[in-house]
Image (cartoon, rainbow, N blue to C red; front, side):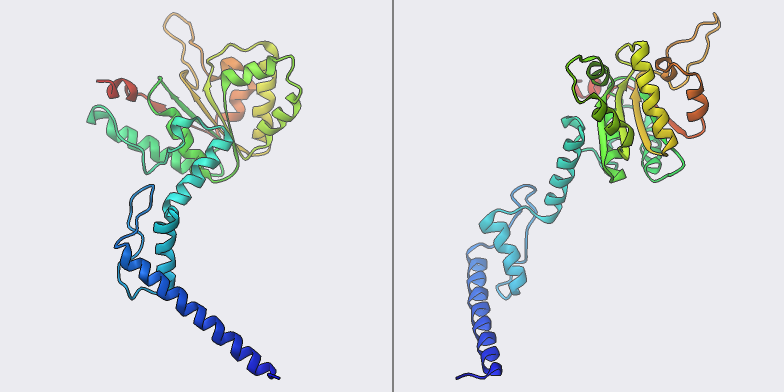
Length: 276
């Protein structure tokens, strides 16, 4: 009958033999497959040295035999899945600040770089609660907002303004209260294309409640819009529509004036340039 120590030695010997068999198998695969590449990005997996360690060989086997993605592609897929769950539009799931590209005339490049840097800085500034991205269609408002969602790193909710209005008006919207609570309490809220649809007095009150709650709780909000944040009166005394057109309380401006970072995207449309 074996002693306890002999049993332990026997188990260790068996484990070492199995490890040796596994290492021989993986090294054999290394010789058969001279290189391993991630099936998504094509980046080589591990060195082709037949004397590679078991760990390296196992990594190679995952890439070549199983077709597993490299760590970078896994992280990117995970980030895109997260943004998709938050409601970010599919065309901007890839958005990152590092991927922000200049467009058009070089006269605009400095402002484009500055806009991206200011948006990135906003994500890490606890004092600034509202980021207002204003500009014409195709200037990159949605891209920067999506990049902010990724950079911010916390749970978020992305909703189009028109969609929000429609859902508030829907008579059969049974979960309306839960929906509003989500918009009020999520760490980061993005309201895309703000002002695209006219609001009623009721929806204005609801919007004011959402923004007011988030202000009181110091929660970050991003707004993208074709309208200016604060419009100026013309020589004729008229004032065009602005962000505050959609709120019943003029005190909204007083609340957000000092905690808002306004970024104006004043260059031409990326889409128009891409079609040329």
